[in-house]
Length: 527
Image 1 (cartoon, rainbow, N blue to C red):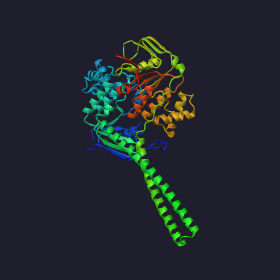
Image 2: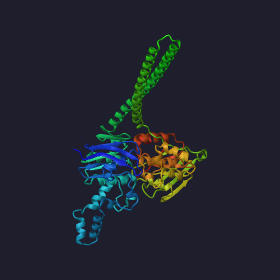
Image 3: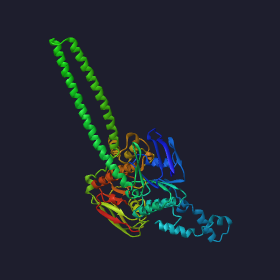
Image 4: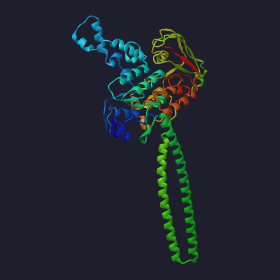
């Protein structure tokens, strides 16, 4: 049974750029994963399938109710909506409070209906989700992981039979990711999951890859997909070598034929001058040789054209696995001369852990800040940035700080990439700016578009670039920088951080990523 069918989807950006053309797909597997490079259009495809965007061409047919989990919960971040309001329970809870105070209007009882145990049930559910036991708490005070779990729980308990989930595990800790996998495995509807989380993608039954050449379906989970991709890439590399060998051989043959023709022409001219051969015979031989040479040249040109076309196709396939690098500027010598960068003495955070924090960060140290969702990891960063005041204790900061958060809040979203990098790093020349942006995979056209048009992964690459290129060299506060990155980009970021000569504090729930970035120190925050 197909729960969704998309026919010949095409989508163009407002500047006329085409994201993809004539994509067709159907969802019949209960759990389908979508993978692909950052910026390839996965989130746009998800919004088209959820009917949150209109295609430039084509159609989407839904056979059941669908709902979507988007990467960036702007609605929650920029408003004071409470947990109760988001879940649709606010009026019922207010009615229960008024009835408890002695009011007996009929409309209050109508609002409550049969939900007399709602406060107790909601309290139990919030506790199960690892959220504060206060339904009137604004959603924008929750951690990224807490908010993600709340939004996901609401979706799994809705009437939707198709859930389109765009990076649902991004902000979840290990416990939260296990909870998400359990929810997916027990969900009776269909789920389309865009993710770069290896563990999550192990639980899908079909994998789609979106690339420059279209949408391709692979049977099986991420491990099956990666095995197939490895075999394909090895075959493409071998075919490229063979085509290049044939091109070289064809070029050599063309040169040999040309030299032989020149030798025959020279011999014919010599015989003509000597007069030892009849002129008619020599003319016939000359015409026949010219005809043979023209025929050979035409045949060689046809073969060259075929080989050129085949090379272009193979190179396009090969480039699908080419990953852009991350540029992290190493600190200056004056920055390295600083010994102590940050000191916390018995600091109590305003949110999260109640335990005092004692921490000293020195030059060239790489710290992993561990802890479950809601323990205060992001609060610690905001306290260092003086955006929040500690409840008590002493805090000393002896270095510039550069914060890379989960929502790219430091980027001016009305700016384009060139303007953003110029704003944060005015010391860079225009040519350096374009070189650095090209290095993270942004074409010249993309660099001149508003940042809002970039994918989550592209925004994270730009944010990291802006943060690391500042002068004087800052202490990097990296709040889940790997969240929005595709599988290969994560490996590239890990490599860049492992080679980085500066200092950073990192929050990440991806154990594989953390183990590959050269962590020197660890701080665990308790709930």
